[in-house]
Image (cartoon, rainbow, N blue to C red; front, side):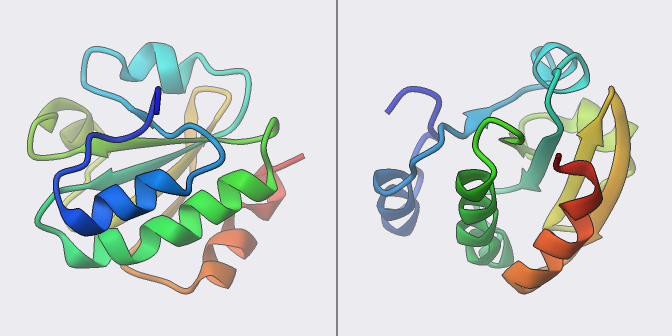
Length: 127
C-alpha cells in the first residue's frame, strides 16, 4: 500500500492492511515539505518500533484521519531514525502526537490516550 508504514511486526502488518487513508512515513529530510508546508492540518505521530503504547494509539489516529479525510493528514515519524525533528520539537517521551497547522505546532498530546481525547484535542483545528 503506497504511503503506508513499513511493517516491522506482525501486529503492524495487520494495521496496515485495513487503513483507508494513506499514512505517510516522514523523515528529517521530508518533514518540512510534508508537514510544515501542508495546506491541511497534519497530525504527526512520533513513534518507535519498540513502543507498545505507540502501537496501541495507532488505530485511534487512523480512525480520526479516516473520519476527517480531505481535512486532515496523518503522518508518522520514527524517532529512532529521525532524531533531528524529534529534538526540534522537544519529543522526550513516546507516544507523542503533535497537530501542526499553518506550519506551527498547535496541540501536543503526550502518552497513550483514548480516541475521544485525540478527537477533542484536535477538533478546533479540523474544519
